[in-house]
Image 1 (cartoon, helix red, strand yellow):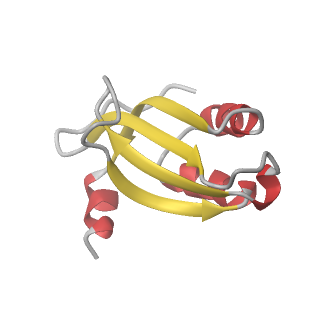
Image 2: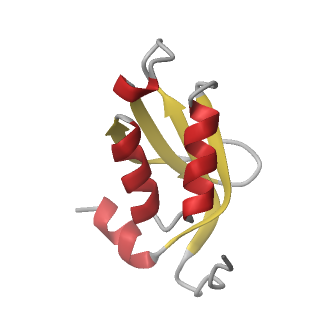
Length: 100
């Protein structure tokens, strides 16, 4: 599914998802999400957290991540403790909610 080109006020970067619980039991895991530049996670800022995979999927969709990317993230996170979603675009409206 093609994505819309970013508007000037939108920000494109990487969504970093990290499983915070030590166990691989992802159904009960806590996930931290941050957003930052494309080279590394330095300067990334916190965008939220989700407990359980279903909440993570819903949050990623709220961020504007495509269903295919969400499915990939869930699959990767079932085996790995972290995942990066490249070329993600956060809208000005969502960024405004972070300051609330």
